[in-house]
Length: 73
Image 1 (tube, rainbow, N blue to C red):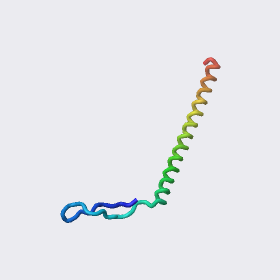
Image 2: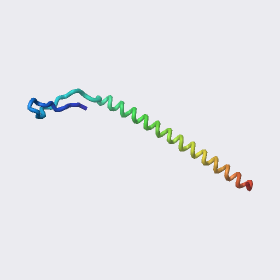
Image 3: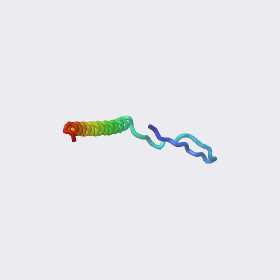
Image 4: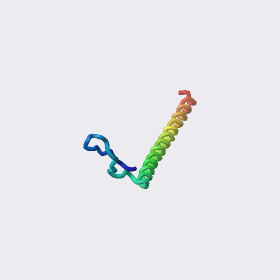
């Protein structure tokens, strides 16, 4: 990725493009995207863990309700 700007001429018109530097190299872009992918995967794993944990809690509560109903309470 090349960054550039238009140079202003003495008469106020826009002149030629001037390169001022480069952005991330392809390798740096790939590394950055890889890091973002890992972060998203971790978020997904955390969500799955939370969902499973909540599912277990709901199941335990249902069993407790069934037990209480069975006792006639």
